[in-house]
Length: 290
Image (tube, rainbow, N blue to C red; front, side, top):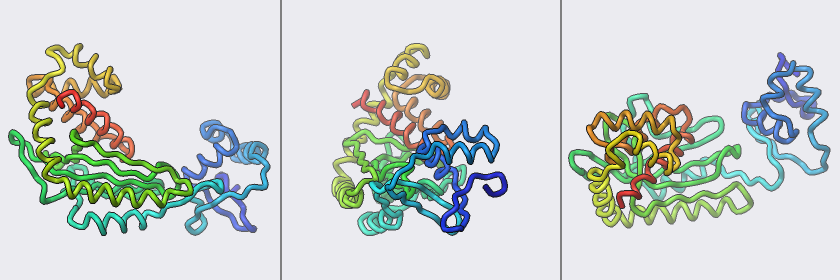
């Protein structure tokens, strides 16, 4: 216990816990993080000592200096962010981050828990009824096990420097958990990037067709009808209501205006992982126009 914080003593050395490793410690003990946070420091320390399972199996600790970043069992296999970025830089050498967004976002993010890289093909811009789009992809990883290794393709819309993303043609998504074979996932990501580059023209033509249809088709003439459709597609009601209000400003509830509204709203979400999930839900609506 140091300064009222729960710490780990390893070989007579005191290590602080990050928010993520503290959450992992609570899960190992079978006690909710919220419960521990409500206790005094002394009581919390005692509760963890009494509830952590006794086992001869070792734990993996990832630490930076005196701060523990993560705790895992022996089955967890770590994939370093540098290894993923090396593959990306080698096989997507002509891709680049989009322009800096209105909120200062660059498309590149690396925090305590996650890495996200958001890259577009600057040679692939197309224009559909005055709207400009470029193909691209996300890759993500977490050295501390917060999320899987993964990649997802998309199209980027250049409007007001917003990072608005969706895909409609040959949607590609690949994820791999951090198990013994997580390293093999790098080969799959390399293959998917190579395929994305090789099929530029084919994907562009299909995308133009789908987006053109989405600009013409509506999900209903009344807001209530649109909300019902969005709910059936898994869009949370609160988010759907805001998107419907924004889309209505364009004069009609076209699929395009609703997807556009949803992806704009996603930019207000704090965490990159949560933004990606909303973007994916919005992109799924384009299947209604395919």
